[in-house]
Length: 383
Ligand code: GTP
Ligand code: MG
Ligand code: NA
Image (cartoon, rainbow, N blue to C red; front, side, top):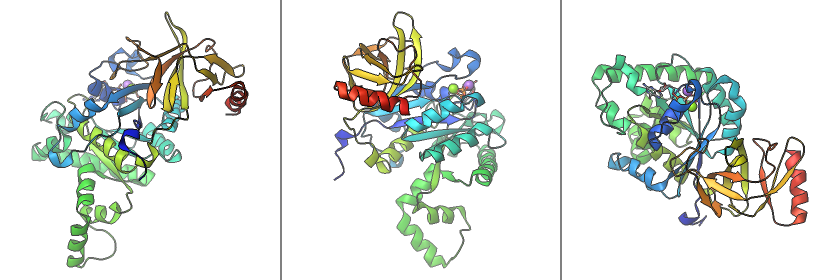
């Protein structure tokens, strides 16, 4: 036995992609917020973090046809939003380095693999992060002839319910884009439902194949999936619309599935603190605060913390721990919830003196005695 379900922490998911593909809007749709419309020029310029509790995920998954549903063991998902603008490569890398899993958002109407999508693929590969593709803006397919099946409907059902020529248009667009992505990045990708089907019935499929006596290189799409599923090397593609919400249940289900089936061993809650400073921010009434992603362990009010600073290591004491409400964005000022302790995984605003020169991207250490303070001061500056 590896560990009990109760010991599973929330997976950290990073959302990456080219500028304006709909990353923030997708999160807005799940949260029922309007973060994107409040951004200057509609451009994300900071990393964000939002906690999506289990009941939100379960409510979404319940919208799927029964054969696609999956249980939800972790307390929720912590999703990190990143900018797609070309000047924020460092923030995309920071986001990717923090996460267990990622969503790569691709605009279905794009004509080619876009620059920052390609860069995101490179970053994710370098950090060894598994990811799913959200094929977003499906509502724009077929010269706006796409008919919304229902708000937050399964995109598999929605696609199947479209007029034949709209379905054709959709598949043609994706085939074209897929060709470009494979050519440039050598990825294997497939609609998630095909991959799930192939996994559910690998025995029957291989029997079929043998009885047909086919050998050698895969020829039909079905065969191709069948051959590769065993290696789990295919990337699950989930059509979505941040406007209608179609595909949102599907993508949350896929993230849950991958977390529970493939990542499980890596998602055990541990007491040892792992935390990273996302942003250093002055907040009216609170002074300079640090937004932190807590990956593991529990932070307490009164803890002695050590963080790398521009002019040397900073040692301070946590005087407050704030989180946004569930389904609210950490980077947007809101009615924060005060805590005595915060358990991973969570995005948390840490109040402590002397954070003015803290370095975004640095690790945050908790020291339990003076000797640890000295050790972490050294470690902080060696990063
Ligand atoms: P950056 O963070 O700046 O890289 O952009 P982003 O990927 O977060 O995209 P954002 O959410 O800012 O959306 C960009 C634009 O695309 C906005 O005008 C959205 O309304 C629009 N948009 C996003 N998703 C969809 C979608 O699914 N369908 C349609 N029709 N428009 C969308
Ligand atoms: Mg954005
Ligand atoms: Na944008």
